[in-house]
Image 1: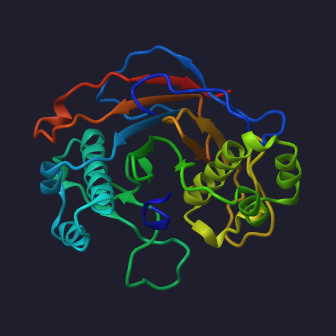
Image 2: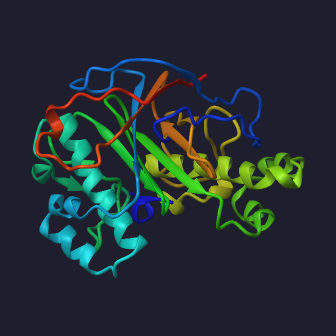
Length: 293
């Protein structure tokens, strides 16, 4: 699920999963590591922040006036918890890299593909600090988990999906898959098809979010079975390669990463539960390090 359409836990969550990948597609290997918290991701590195979605009343204080008004439009419940968690987590992560208090973080969502400004911003989220900002990021969530991917070089897209609400997986595949993907999907046993669909769909969403096109890039024209997106006739699709990686994800979920530069290491972190004012002075040790292959 994307953040407003565009916009793993702290343990080794990687499991081998069936999918529709062609030979050469990549999945991560798990390895141990340490981390210096003040460092922006190095070339080839992506930092992945995992945040469980739950009610945190103190996180509401991190939002600006417009965001708090947005939260107030939701009744108490899962949708409000997702909104507050997402907006506060983006500020906390921005504070970590930019050396500013969370309340001082400015986030824009301008669309690079719209000729005129729209009433509701719907572009890729961006920290409006520096030209360009020192880090690029992407955010995605389900009702239970939120992921924020951060890179210091190039652009990134991330997606996480839950399989709990999928019903007609064969129908979804016919709608969203290229002819070649449909052929590979048809060879999967019925018990593997939900996982196979999720794996492919998260790769498509991550790529669509990287470009900022969202569903204006028809998923039927994006073959994601290999290590690079093979795009059909999609207006505005970048000429540069879009790299794809599967990510470890919580049980019942699938997650994927897209980048316009090769990623050789993914380091996963957890945000602290308390939104303490000293957040940016704390060090963080990665819960999991993965090396895409």
